[in-house]
Image (tube, rainbow, N blue to C red; front, side):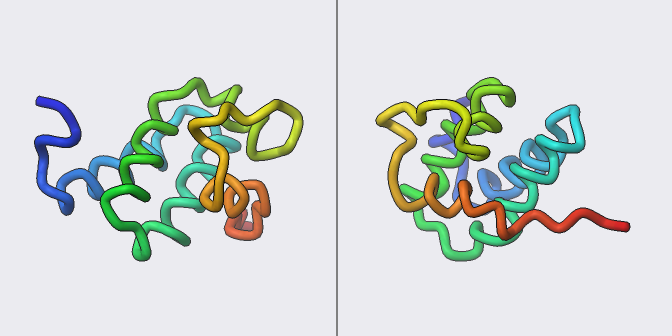
Length: 93
């Protein structure tokens, strides 16, 4: 079963879990914080973009988000620009 055959709510729940369980704190805060901040506004296209991003290697996505790697064309746009601001990352103390 592919992500696109699931209903939107199930896909959102799956994306939330995957974004907060990446394996490193840096990736969890980047993916998870981005998800928490922006997912309420996503439509089908926004969610599909994020699902594709979740399939990429964390080290690559973090390089794109931190501005140390060139963003592939398929991920360029408003969502990547929002991710690169990193203003959504809240590190608990």
